[in-house]
Length: 545
Ligand code: G16
Image (cartoon, rainbow, N blue to C red):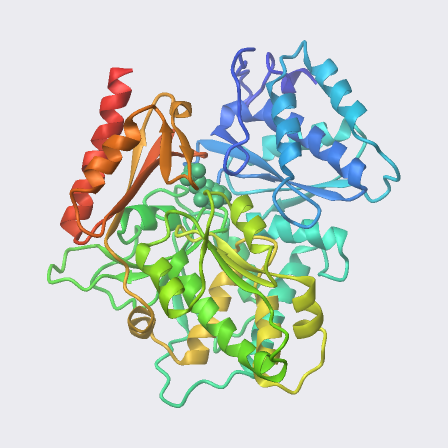
């Protein structure tokens, strides 16, 4: 259809926003993500690619329409493979080729792709599509429907969902034993496991745990969908107060805002007694706990963060404790447990994992696909990005030994249930919040306990530097070293060497037109100075180009 061609690309407001033939798009950290007016033809072509993959595998393939933490004027699309994982890398290349073809080249590009794949039975092939709350979503859902129709593949519009719900639904369509592929199937699988885990967990006598969380929903999909999930959990088990439900998406709130600014989100007051707060991002695949930072200045709205690293360490501590029973009874057989982080992980968390827990964390580039893949090498793979994306993945061996072998051991029963509270297809703010609450209650911990009993963050800062062309920045060493522009890494090293216990890196974002600067040092002041001087390095370079 002409409205989904480059030349006739028609936006949700009905205007044609033609895309020049030489404009190229790349499949970034989380798919294609741009200003929403560019998206209709991209979504159309991506859904077509998804339908081809669905036919090749005779399975359900997911299409998620979201730009997650980006502002509401953006949108995006990413594809999800049959197990609920991110799209296979070869298919990222196919999708990129199809999206980048001109209108004239498209038929040939499509024929070339169709030639490369073999299609057998196709009765189970379908494209499952969800969207977040952006106003450009419904128009893009239509583009996806039209793209899937090119190949006559069944199209399931599952409506406004969180990104993790879409991942979960795709796996459920393909593996009926996993869960029912409906919203209800998702809510009840997670809520029922949480309730059963609650029943068999005895809270310590001197518990300081509070079953209440105030949730910043980023004005996104988390608000309606988490409310639906909580309808299945009595408020005596967990009370949730919702904030930021229906104003401007991600504006002054949400997990990304809280993490980067280290400030309280809109509608959270530093003076009110709000001991335990959490933030979702726009599509509810990130979770960040926080509280007002103790300060002499009553006006300060600084936040103390309990980020992805803190959540990972909390979860691994719990899992290891539950596993002891198994390890004691079968000393020769170990379940392999691993932790995956990115360069953004706070240096204290990495040291704690290495030195106190005796586990060597694996550091991979940013992007759920990299973390998920590395974690899948283990029987229990825990992965979290500092920004709050993360989950735990479990192997088939774990499934057989822990979930499907009946046992009298309470810790192992708890572990089996805990693994079902977790959404192992992808990081899920709802499931992770319930998992964190279950662990805090198990230990009887308040936020003070969580802050004091594990590790303290070293001061850190992240700065977004807008640039015209972020593609000139090329990294290596899990994004911790810049190889291009030539000479820039030397400048970074020189700056870093000026401070004690310092570490820093610069990398291009895969979701926004910015370069990210990350820095750590011994004091807050030094960290800010280091961050600022590295920001200047980027600005000088861009101005001189
Ligand atoms: C996406 C990815 C995350 C990544 C984040 C930021 O998150 O899924 O893995 O950490 O982008 O990526 P970058 O630093 O490349 O901009 P989301 O929540 O925006 O989908």
